[in-house]
Length: 186
Image 1 (cartoon, rainbow, N blue to C red):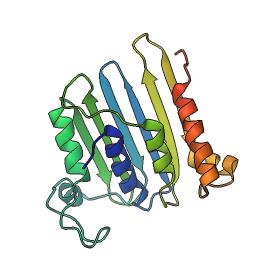
Image 2: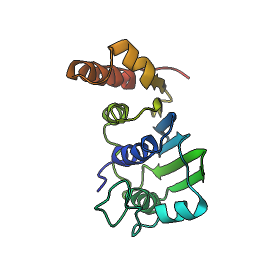
Image 3: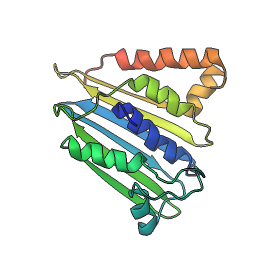
Image 4: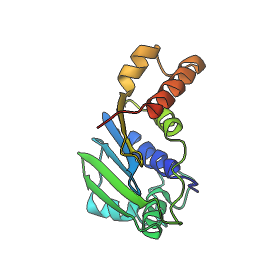
């Protein structure tokens, strides 16, 4: 079950990282009454039939999670977007990758809270994946101040000497939280 929007983004990003992609892009923006995210990968992609099965909660390929009989990531996303007067879009091409976009009305009482965005980014960066991961964040405050940043897994791993040990992960968390707190004028 997803308790926050960050949980949903994490779930969809994990799918992208498991798609044999070389590049996974995660964009998250909020402000002005909307939370929006986009996750794009250049992995294996899906045919129309595979995509239809992926959005059906009662179908799973049985490969990624052999004991599961259902796959709920995309169906939960679709249901939550609909309940919160938001929307969703999925584009996929076999052999070229997939793009998942979703948006939510943050003023709607059925929209889950955003959750810990820097913590979500750290979790995504820790996925066991060969893909380079690019994170983009845009947040607009009520006074019109815009905070934007971008972080790339390969650059962070190089700067921290890897992303495997506890010390590096603590530093990564502090760094991502500091980016979230910066105020930048547009």
